[in-house]
Amino acid sequence: MILPQRLVITAGEPAGIGPDLVVELAQRAWPVELVIATDPQLLLARAAQLDLPLTVLAYDPETTPIPQRAGTLQVLPLAFPAAVTSGQLNPANSLAVLRSIARATEGCLRGEFAALVTGPVHKGVINDAGYAFSGHTGYLAQCAHCQEVLMLFVSPTLRVALATTHLPLSEVPAAITPECLISSMTLLVEGLQRWFGIDRPRIAICGLNPHAGEGGHLGVEEVTIINPTLTKLRAQGMTLIGPLAADTLFQPQQLQRLQVDAVLALYHDQGLIPLKSQGFGQAVNMTLGLPFLRTSVDHGTALTLAGSGQADVSSLVAAVNLALTLTQPVAGPHD
Image (cartoon, rainbow, N blue to C red):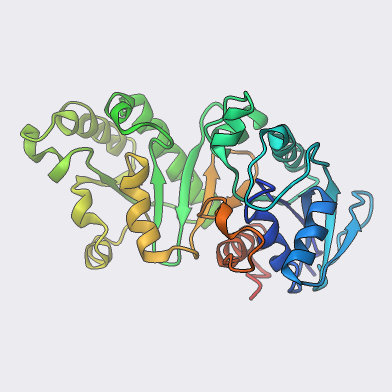
C-alpha cells in the first residue's frame, strides 16, 4: 500500500495568474496532499473573484498527509505586506514571493515534501525590488546550495534542456564553453537516468550557428568548441548526436528518425520556441541537479488574465501530474 504524500506548491507572483491556477487546481480531488505556500487571504479573495468555491485549511506538518478533497487546500501561510490587486505588480511583495520559494525548498530538503511545484513569478518586479533574480532555476540552486543545475522542459512528445537560460542573445556565444557543455550534458544524462529510468540516454545537440556552422563557414563554435567537447564526452560513454542544425532538428519526422530521449538546445528561444509550438500548456519545466524534484508551469504570470477566469490551468495540472508520476510511479498520474 502506498501512503499519501505531500507536494508543496508556490503560487508565484500574487498579481498574476498563479493564484487563479491554484484555485482552479483545488476544484478537483488529488491522491496526495497539496500544500500551498502563499497568503491564504489572497487565495480566498481570488476564489471569490473567480466565483469558485474554496475552503482553506491550516497546514499542520505534524499530521499524516491525506488525499486532497475537491474544493479544499492546505495552506502554509505566508503573508504579503502590501495589498494585492489582480494585474498590478507591486515590488513591496517581491520578498514574500522569494520567501515562499525558500520555505518550500527547505521543506523539500528535509523531507517534509515529496516535491516542489512552482507557479509563475515575474523576474522584472523582483529585480525592481532590489533583489538580483534571473529566475527560479538559479534561485533554487542558491537555496539548495547546488553549484550546477539544468533547466529541462518535458512535453508529451519532447524533452528539451537548455545549456544557457536567461541570457541576452549577444552573451550566448561566450557562454558556450567546454565547461558549460560538459556540465549540461552530465546533468541531463544523470537526470534522465534518475527521473525517467533511461539507462543510456540518446541526446541530440543543437548547433549554435545556422546550419550548425556549415563546417566553419557560418561560425566557428561548432568546430572549435562543440565538436571537440562532444568527442570527449562520447569517449566517456555518452550517446550524443550532433551538433545538428536547429531549424530541421525539431521536425517530428527528424526526431522520430533520430530516436532521441532529449535535445540539448544552446540558448533559450532555440529550444523553447519549437517545444512550446508543439505542446504549449502541456509542457512542464523541471530543474535537474537539485536533491529533490521540482516541476513548474511552462508560462509566465499573464497579468492581463489575472482574476478574469480565462487562465488555462492545464500546465499546472501537467506539472502536478508529472511530480506525482516521478515521485510515486506505482500510483501513476491523476487525471
